[in-house]
Length: 320
Picture 1 (tube, rainbow, N blue to C red):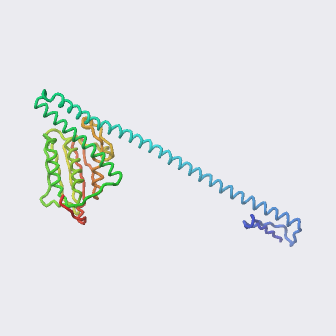
Picture 2 (picture 1 turned 135 degrees about the horizontal axis):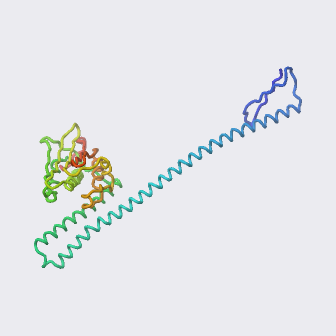
Picture 3 (picture 1 turned 45 degrees about the horizontal axis):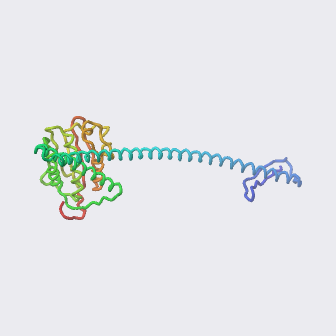
């Protein structure tokens, strides 16, 4: 039997062998037959290579289409995110402009009144006007402080000055500051006698307490109670600021820690703000290695809770 092996080459590369059977007896190929088989092998090699390239091109096109689709999807998402950020920026500029203008307008109005009609104003009205000026100045100061704080936080320029801190002492200090604003709301603190000091930044923890207690007062009904309590749990302390206000729906309890987010309720409509207080609190607590959350049921008040490590290994400085 005669078998013909046809080496199939593409340039100098061997791509396979073609096998042919002529008959059952041994024969020798003529020159024309050798030429024919060589041409057949060469064309077969080219056909095989073209088929392989066509298949590879198809796969490449499919991969390219997938990549283009993915890239288009990514660009659409980026575009959407940029539009959202642009909207947030516009809303922020509008909100800040309004928030700055409102106290400035009030301050300017009362100053002009006192300046031009000083001798005609009764002592009672003078006291009232000065009280409004004081409140609006505090509001303006708070707004500017929050804007500066969020700017420092986002640029990573917040330094923690570690020192021994007594949280009950900070709570008493905040209570003293807010005593006038508390009016008919009772302020109560509840700490065990052996409550430990922690290593922290005194000013920043006081800022957290000031924000949480101020919020509790804002939402508290007349005759209500704001309680600040704490206890030690292992190597951490847990602080709770609770009020008897309207509470927060479960669907909004995570959102309130987002920048610029404010609940749409009657209290917030009467008391405009930036929506930066709670995000700043969360960041300051995180910088101390702690965490903060809220527990609330509508109509049953709020419990803002944060935990901080004792940080006993931190370097000590002057007492906070």
